[in-house]
Amino acid sequence: MTNQINGTEAAIDWFRAASPYINAHRGKTLVICVPGSALRSELLPTLTHDLTLLSHIGLRLVLCFGIREQVDEQLAQTHIKGHIVAGRRVTDPQALSAIISAAGLVRNDLEARLSMGLPNTPMAGARLAVTSGNFVTAQPFGVHGGLDFQHTGSVREIHQNAIQALLNAGHLVLLPPLGYSLTGDVFNVTATEVASAAAIALKADKLVFLVNALPRDTDGSVVRQASANQIQKLYGVSEATVISQTEQSPDKEPEETAQGTGDTSLDQILGTAVQACLHGVQRVHLLANDNPDALLSELFTRDGSGTLITAERWDHIRPASISDVGGIIELITPLQANGTLVSRSREALELDIDRFVVSERDGMVVSCAAMYLEDDSSTAEIACMATHPDYRGQGRADQLLTHLEKQARRQSFRHARILSTHTGHWFIARGYSELALEDLPANRRASYNQARNSKIYQKRL
Ligand SMILES: CC(C)(COP(=O)(O)OP(=O)(O)OC[C@H]1O[C@@H](n2cnc3c(N)ncnc32)[C@H](O)[C@@H]1OP(=O)(O)O)[C@@H](O)C(=O)NCCC(=O)NCCS
Image 1 (cartoon, rainbow, N blue to C red):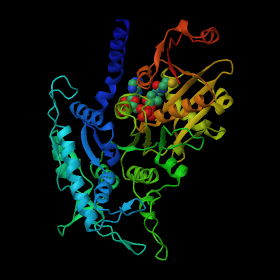
Image 2: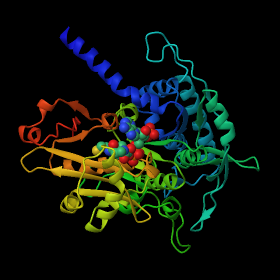
Image 3: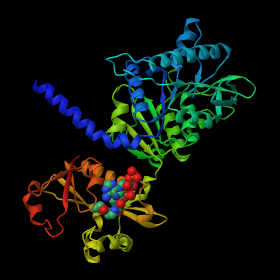
Image 4: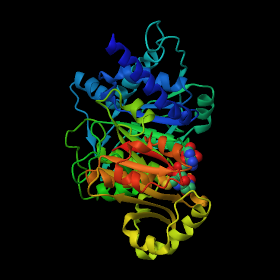
């Protein structure tokens, strides 16, 4: 009984914590790309339930799917081995016919699953309209390194007006990895390319890829958040990665992928993610396809579960130096004058400059924050966070906060704390909870400024 009550309370708490995200996601366009292997796994029932749920809370959904495993299986039945080069299939007539058949079967399966609505199931009462069609125009991928890819195509155009009209009417749009040409031919296009082109054309808010493994940092830890720029630096992938892997010198045979078949490689997905970011998609999420909760936890919890790649150029965040003091003063003076920030003299700022990080634009400091790490404490205190009014709402403070929290975590600090008179809700939305003054350690309580009467917020790192 107690367990049941605890479980109910946890569910209610989770629902409350998720409500800001529910509001934030309503009306947003999400393109999701699911590899063929994931469609055959235990993930599928949960995924279709979750997509229905997302549609019902007002997300505009485009579902792109791969069919590589399904096609290879069909070809194997006639003793034909699939021929994949640098992540793209060489589509001869037999492969094309297997592709058309597999795409049809998967599409029917998805449509059936997304139509479920039996009582006492997560889909009860759901009436989700699912639509597919000739929304992708393709052109031949062509001959590369002397190899004719035959019926393999690349995306020429996404018919975004037609898709937008369906999304406006509440339909989930299903995009198979197929494109049609002006000559009436059918082309095999990678699901990754269809998803990325659709996200760019639709100006999607989010592009989501389900992947076999999340990208890892040089220290082996999973990359939770990075800019397209950082991904380019970390992995050497670029906008051209997908093409360059296939464009080889004419005297060199194109390489077969190591495993011959299988899902698109992580490098190719990262290259596609970077390309999408450079073309205006603000957020690309990579989610592990062995975690059935990944999609909901990515969308409805602050820390998410996968890797978030943002269009914003994070390399603009850097430690402050003494030459930034003037810029920081200019930024914070109006906020000190109206009491939002604690007043700091130029001398104090100069002494503390090593504690500051800044985000700059065109050589000007547009955002700053400081972090105070006390050796004898497990808590890092974040302070003096500000963004110039002209640059607010672009995620800069969010990035500074994430950067500082990451730094504190690396130094084994267990909590981050902030004192604020005006901006509590901004921190609450980022996982902080209010603390009472009595909860502060005695030494910090002693230096607490009673006249400011700031509220105290803390988050577990
Ligand atoms: C709070 C502040 C640092 C945010 O900077 P920013 O770079 O615009 O932050 P982000 O872009 O990451 O976040 C912007 C979001 O926070 C919201 N936000 C801004 N101020 C907020 C507040 N006081 N309470 C709740 N949300 C707030 C914005 O509406 C915006 O929401 P949206 O993304 O849904 O449009 C900036 O508004 C500022 O300089 N404020 C004055 C100084 C201050 O209060 N500092 C914090 C105390 S240390």
